Image (cartoon, rainbow, N blue to C red; front, side, top):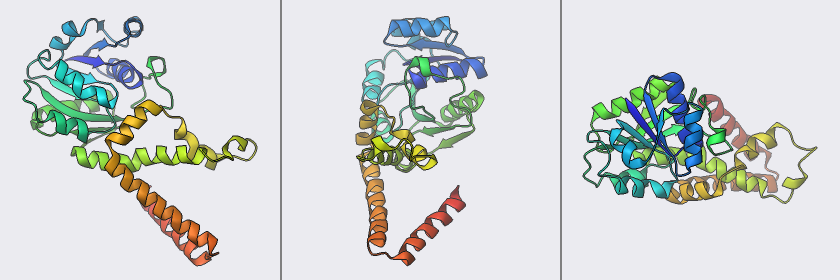
Length: 274
């Protein structure tokens, strides 16, 4: 197949490099910055670069790797250029807003929302890796695409080396991502906003490192993701605040029984779910 990667930042370039490393598919690449495209071609991350008007009509699968708010406008702008019967997908970390908007359109191609579950605390082409998705999950959120096209996309993910493929609804994806990813970033950022954070050297070890790691964050991108997924994320924040308040009350009251019970519950859950 001919696969077009639109956007050669961390995720897009890593997808391109993974395709080149693990499959025999022909990989085309496009990026707004021409120098990035040329570097990707010179390094063998893609087989071909060029203008979108030349690349899009040739692609059997197009993967769009932009910030949340740019994906729908891009697909609509180029709707008449995508190859008939081809698959257009994305790599965005939220799905409902994108998928439920695009499912209303009558396209000659198939849009299937997707989320390759991996990332780093750094961004850009120069930080992309051909191994970024090793042992990762690939989530598909089809709305009106036929099973055959969904199967084509999930089989490609397996061919690339993803350890697991999951097919679910956009809403369930966003609910789960609010818990497994977004709330962790909110917690980490809240944690390092403490006035004591700058004094941590000499006093910190694994706990500080583990909790604070994902506070290294792209504020522009994650603000869009948080707002686009605000209802599930706010529910998770409310649950977190409620649980923190239980600990606060137990500590304030010197209620050892309550504190031990809370930690026993948490320990049991963690042991059961990993």
